[in-house]
Length: 372
Image: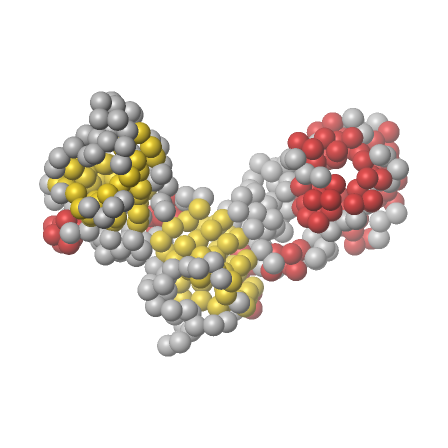
């Protein structure tokens, strides 16, 4: 398969029109047509724009069949194009090919978010420090042309009403020295964030490191000025060290239907929530009511305070009487729920569900939880 045919196959496999790929890559639609028809052969810069537009590495774009036949006409054509490149782009291609042996170009190693810190540097100052697994904030332009410019466009901040908050994005090497500097971006809101309000940082999957690896998946971080509340995709390593108390799992996902009327609700959190120091507080943090605001008497079931098993992270909500059939219910978990690590939930968690017929039987537990 020649490159033009491969490009068309990849584009259609991602359900992208040439118009959509044009917008995502910054190349004209007519130019993409000419590449796919074989009329034009891409330069290294064009290949990089196409790989970014398709959301993949250059190695994935080129494919094994284009890389595995040294004497093929395809390789000869690529070699001919390389001869027309300026010296700095030849150097960039040489570095890229070397990176393939380490697996970065083929996507074996993806960029990862490794740490999140909330910094109160001044009485009115507030910053979020994001540390990644590779150099993203000191990208060398001879390796990745316009890499820094694109990376700076990968971060956005929103308030709880999804209104965008203007930010200054500060590369780590502007603030610090050492090997972590190039791996760090500092997000500084340009307007003062309100206390006890939720905000969200979004990080585009197109964030790229100096080793050509991508983030691969859009990330979101839900936080307040006091603590981090949630990360998507869920990251257990970060949860252990940086996150506030989190609802990790529920046997009834928010929005679930046909729930048995006699089913208990089992909740699992990220930290011990039954310890003596927080037990009495946490017993007051759960309420269940119908969608018509009719409260339901519930019993909060916890393990003993000295239980050192995984049950220390679990709460069971037991309705004192069977729920009504074909009725919508709302379980509210208060933001004041606390863990033994002295972290709080930080924001109310809501699980809505609808019961089925009175004689419906209980299903197995559902994996995960969807929070409204």
